[in-house]
Image 1 (tube, helix red, strand yellow):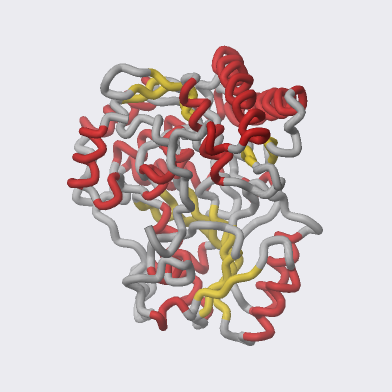
Image 2 (cartoon, one colour):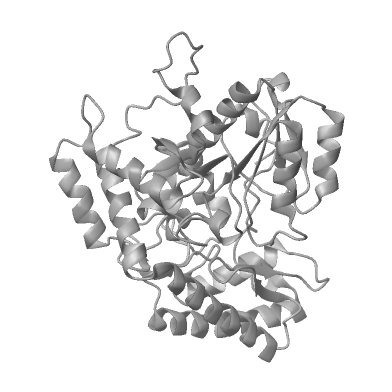
Length: 432
């Protein structure tokens, strides 16, 4: 929509956005190409069109757009100077808050985005263990834009080939594939990094067994909480699954959309980045001018307060379960439950679109997203906020009733008759 903005975006910004997940190829053609503002659970384009949003700032907004309490807390920190010459009292308060909140975190480093802290975790693991290989699950799509990870994907252009050799892949929930890597690279793996869970739950005590394999082989066990943090549990998915990592990384929802990320973990590991141990070889961990920006850390502190005070995590689980039941109920009534379903954890559901052959279909996913937009709902995926209430639930289900009716017709007649858009594409692909 609005080709003028689209053209200007692509002329000024490679990819038309600063995150590939916001790119044109991730949305049907009737999606707004640019947004003006957000309020609560809604976003508005420059023409004033209003959409109920389930993207929520790439899952970073968990309280709601434009929350006044959080905005005021941010503004108060801006008036204090926002970025000072030495560490600020706000920086210390935020660090101690995260340490008090997360049992696995004994020290913390703040940064502005997840790639910085995940890469810092890898550097720490290599420095602590003296080993060079890192193992990550094949099924988990993204850990960092840095070479150590991107070089291991199909998007290898610009990355020295030798760099990507040091990132190894295993299969999530397949302990044997983890053990095989340690057997193939004995004494050479510095760390295993994974998300505790996404839409797939850990089976057969997988997380704890991987941690045991790491301990046995002198490797660090790292949990990336970018998506799960401050959504699954106030203390992260590590608390939900009752497992304590050596290192963990947070970002996205920790400050309701403000730019904060964190690396935390055991003191003996984190302390490698310190300057107090005389004569010790130094590790240049993260050193970011804006990493401890007071405004964003003030937003983090206030977000945690609201999460605790208003039982926000419970709301995610409750709303998500109603949404799952409602959407699956519509699909069942329309007799397309084998072709469209919502699965996963209620706090972070996932919708699956299948074609006539019952295989996952990006074309049918695009069609569903297109029809939801036609009915006022922007739903590239499902990220729930505290601003999603009963009114928003009913609006979503009413839109889905109409969208899935078209979906059913497309299963019978072919999606080509109904899809008015190019099919959305995977972010990780070798060619445009």
